[in-house]
Image (cartoon, rainbow, N blue to C red):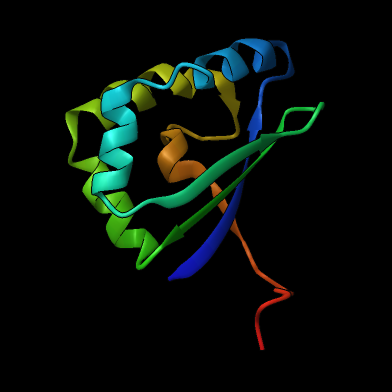
Length: 108
């Protein structure tokens, strides 16, 4: 299973609310992520609003495409879009920047 890391920028004035929303992710959203192949998914928020995400998936593009077909994802992305900067009209699930892995302890 491949590992993916990505970043987004949360508006500093919205960080507390963003974190609060993620303490109560809808059960149907959690289930959709699991059902579409998102594994070991974590989000980390720095004090300046830099959001780092980590996820494992067999194929991230396929997992994203499967999520895009769910109704719950459309609702979640619509609610979360207002928290971010730099999306240029894309949703957070489309606008994140993938990072290149340069080291993995268990790797070769």
